[in-house]
Length: 164
Length: 413
Image 1 (tube, chains in turn blue, orange):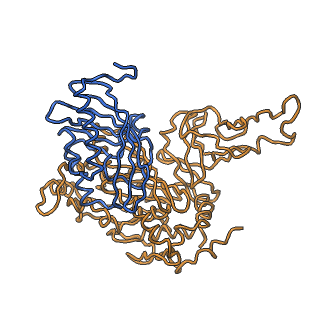
Image 2 (cartoon, helix red, strand yellow):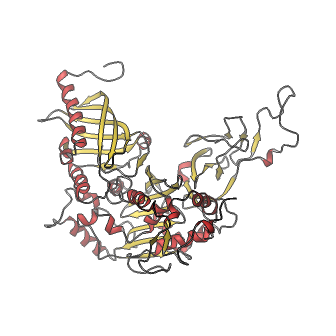
Image 3 (cartoon, helix red, strand yellow):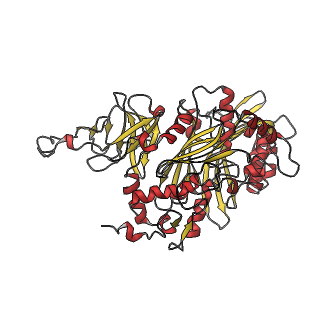
């Protein structure tokens, strides 16, 4: 245990976790959204919730996927159904720390900043916040068992369709 | 004296089926709306009673763009007070919510009780007999501005107007009935969030009342073959058209059961949901209502989409921006399973809702599309020219026309 409450890991475990975080962000920023669900276990949970709701223990947020199928449906809806102005993200990650380890699941927290780039070129900070993850290293590749995206601001500008 | 609104806006005809684009951008129109609508003969939703449960609890919000404090005073009564010190106009409550025994302005320590009455003024008698307030200064005439408020089914409304009818009379019986149905069992807040939109507030409120666009803009249900075309539905409107409800009804349990079977069936030539539990619900209301979007004039919404219940308030933030506040709720009697269904269905609504996200973006597109042609106007003719509600069918713009009827009534144009 270090001074900030994080725990030290063998280098290999730490490297696998860092790789997962980076690969996930690149897949979204590169518009490889069909790969998104494959970063999760079958019994996964992905939630996006603002900090106020999260701290008050409220249960409803911006997105709430409680199965891998729901993640796939989100992307299919984005591709085939939802109407929005084309845009991409750039994820900037920092400050990853390992906060615990239970039953083979690593609890990991990472700060993020997402810039949204609209098709005409407008760029703006779209969202900042913290990922609170449970990651398993047991399989062929590291996977999220749970990813909670805690957004610092209560506000979403216009709409959110691409996951963070 | 500002330009007279009648000189500023040339309404294209005598009715409400053609809306001048200028009305979505003009700063003078925006100013007049704050006076004639938001401080006019309307009741504004300002919060939920359960969120200020204990004496001394307060929240801050807005009526139009006027900051207000909503609180429970020490006697347990709800008060709505303009958030402005009578001294120099400073905001008295800075936090979004909190608990206090009195209202104290941090600037010069003017202190008010929770009804807004001025109790003391710092150094009111001066220091060492130097300075101080004049002898004729009356504390009783220098309180904070308290507004008239009414509570119905736990929803707090306030008004600047001395002339507006009592709340339930102003709403009318059909509007009250729907509030009773959706909200009357009590509310447990499940989440709140805000959606900030690059468009005039009225473009969002037109969208809320636009039952014509629902199955066209929002392609989620069509793409995944979730449409309920067999269902009955219609529009209800209050006398004069100010408030509206757009609804659909499953006529029997059987119809809902058949629908459930249909939506779970694989469709060969379309897309299917990998996890159809997203749209699984239960028959929550005996009347069979599966969807009801209600708006009360000018900017408040009570929503039932299947088992997803929410309140929405669209706050104007200048001529070309608005902020939509959401309160997603359940009831005190919800089972754990029902609560989970509400959580799952929340994926359909809000800024990231697979069904409703598009409502956040069309307003901005209209704002951009109309900006250079403010002399032109829109066409709102679907379903006729008047504000007579339709018993059957929702392919109509009648409730948008009702909104503009209320607008013309308030603005005097």
